[in-house]
Amino acid sequence: MESIQLDDVDRRIVHALSVQPRASFRTLAAAVSVSDQTVMRRYQRMREAAGLRVLGRANAARVGWSDWYLRLQCGPGSAPTVAKALAARSDTSWVHLASGGTEIVCALQTRTAEERDALLLTNLPGSRRVATIYAHSLLHVFTAPTWNLLTRALPDSVVRQLDPPPVVADDGTTTALTLGDEVLLAHLARNGRASNASLAAATNRHESNVRRRIEQLWRSGALYFDIDLDTRALGLTTGAMMWASVEPARLEAAGQAMAAHPEIPFVGATTGPTNLVASIVCADERHLYQYLTHRFAALPGVRAVETAPLISTLKRSGPVDRDPSADQLTKLSNMPAS
Image (cartoon, rainbow, N blue to C red; front, side, top):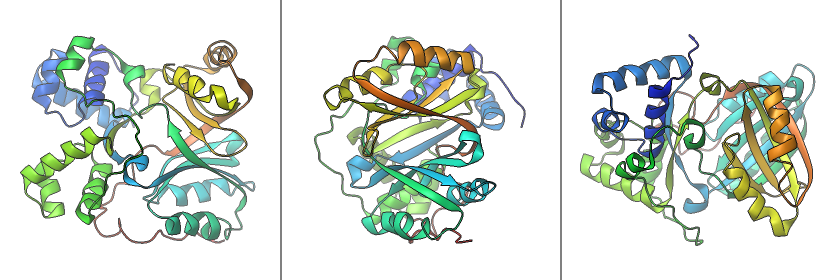
């Protein structure tokens, strides 16, 4: 795949997409101050050369599902096979090989306790390739999964005109999803900019109903849109995962502070011996060192920190590119046992 570096126009397009992911090319063009044809051409180029995708995802806390972060230790030569199997699953995202290629880090979203237990208690422990499993339940997300901080290129006045949804406070309420909603979310997870016509056909709904339901789910916080983009196109070639132990009384402040750091696209509170997990993207190893020893080191309440360099990424935010209709609501596939 051709490698590109995003220029100012590209970054403005990505920023506009992160604010209004399903906006028409005409609306995006008006926000970026270029022609419709320029936006379409740039968008397609970024799709092909930088892996740009817009993906709709369910907010687990809002729909009664659960999010997990997994760390798997594998024997020499086994991790790539296990990682590929995890990447092929519709319930995983951000599947990375880390720490010299013997460790796998991935995110998992499950709808039911049965789905969770099938993977964590049966499938993974039953694989002779997996030596150690650490499962961290994600309790709270301090950042929305967006590239706003990394690609911020539009003035606030333009952002307001794009009409982003309000930040919805986490009051503990959940949104009940219908079977049709789950099918709709499965298709949006594959392509967040799928046309209303194609989504209506896939869910047996009218276009107006699809448009209205997407807006309802998005504005309620049950649905969010993620921008999937190869960070190398932003000049960021070094990635790492971080696990930190923070004094409980200072966990909220530390998480909120990290959420404002441009090096941190994601940070959340978890269960486990460490209570903060974050992904880091930097220009190079020197940038990573400076971040850890200056900006991160200045946070109060940090007791310990562990970092693992990312060697390769087998899967980013979205699912594998296949039609989800047939298997989205079936039970999870088994991991290979040998």
